[in-house]
Amino acid sequence: MTEQRRYQFKISRDKAIPLIINDEVFVPTGTTDVLFEAVSSYIRKSGKTLDLGCGSGVVGIGLFKNGLIEPPLYASDLSRQAVACAKKNASFHHCPIIAKNGSLFKPWQNEKFDYIVSDVAGISEEIAEISPWYNHVPCRSGIDGTSLVAEVLRDASDHLNSGGLFFFPVISFSDTKKILSTAHKKFLHVERLIHKEWPLPEEMVQHVLILKKLRKNGHIDFVEKFGLIIWFTDIYVAYHM
Image (tube, rainbow, N blue to C red):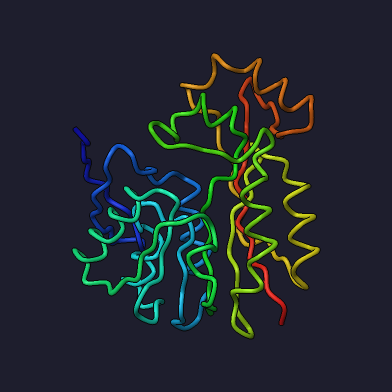
């Protein structure tokens, strides 16, 4: 039987919204928080928005609650459970939504948007397997974590209106140089909005040898400071203006 949990997602300094997340849907992480912070701070007016890799709908619904979505919210995810969860959360928060199940941009072949916010999996598959983030949730992003993000970057321009903005995280548990190289090839402007460093979760400390092997082979990156392993999340915006 699928279990559900309640989650409070902070959308401003003094306000959080409740969400329902079942155990087969990706639970928001620190990366989700900084992605939402970056998008909320950068956007100046509401627009037609796609929440790509929407999970529970957390980012899109949060933006809607902050008046930054021109209804309806568009959302999609590879997981049918995630799409159902996003629809349920959107209904609870009175957020009009068009949510579709499918891989990356396949559900949106004839659509263009003012804003695309991508939170598709972007870490090494080997790290996903040992992390606390992907319990019961598949992560098919390749050994260097780039396969899904690179595909999204290659296709994103085709789904942006003139002057449109594409937001995406780059996580050091992937080949960040490869991801940014793809971004610069596809967009005229690629701007980093936020840099956030994190200590390695306690659940992963026992797997340090795996991390070091992946780093040695150029698949990921991290630094060691004061006996800690430090990794990072960067949030970027890409556009053609």
